[in-house]
Length: 412
Image (cartoon, rainbow, N blue to C red; front, side):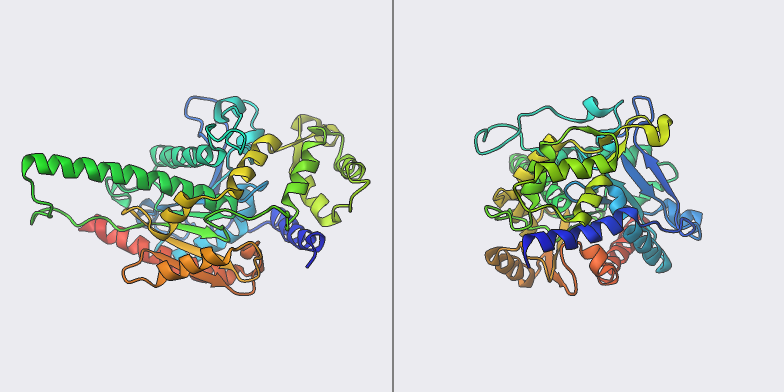
């Protein structure tokens, strides 16, 4: 398939997903962006609570899952899928809370002018020319960790036993594409911290002649948190030929104004910027238009439109996503002691390196492995649109299992 056709197919799915709506009767959702005080979250998010049919006691013990979108998307892209997932796990007696997060430089995290400067670090960011500069994906991972802590601290009605002491504030993280890479970078950071803590503990035990074993009155360790990556290549993406046209789209958007009189003006600007190149598919242009929001909502249709993402920040994230990343791959195949990883490859995805696939298959087959590798049939990169039922069939049983383990641990 040619890059243009591939882009068009992805854009059709993305456009459908952005504009899809779902009934709110089965689960309630609350949005958190700018609350106008010092308790504003570090990233904007939408919290999907357990369905209204859930009993108060079950809702109070519902663990938290964070959902992370891909490049140039937003948390709302995952609203339809996640609401159905919420209903499914609740129907099995194990409700969860889901936070649909807008990553750095994306969605309401960026478009909220009151908090934009506070939330976003200033570049330059790591690149081939600046290897010692901060990595944009690492910064995004730090922000996700911060918003998880914020949600735990500010969500009311949670049973204290729902999250054991020392357990991550998010019992599960589900990241698609770039979102999965952000989740793995966060996991790599946790792995480093766990290794340092283990070395410190071993040194302390050696100095006091302690024995490394549980005493008879100590509790066993808590269950493992889950990190799901959905069509995320852990070690980087080979993109010299730009097979999916992502770099071309980023370059085109970077050459355009930041504001437009209308979405038609965006179409004309994109056509003008590509006079000597093949034009972008209409579906892709329409999807890009969904990333425009009114500068002043009070003006209604007469308001100019502005991007809800920052193109420099988005480009820095994509640069980091492309690079080889042995730490992210290592954290994926051998996660820190607190976690297990689940890697889902879309069967029709064209971005996977054979060596990475072999490494994941080998690690997944090893005895006692805390990583599992799945291939989702009938799905391309937008796997939650192509085969949502199949994806939920992979994720839901694991969330139900972990939710039950957390409940039993809290009651022990």
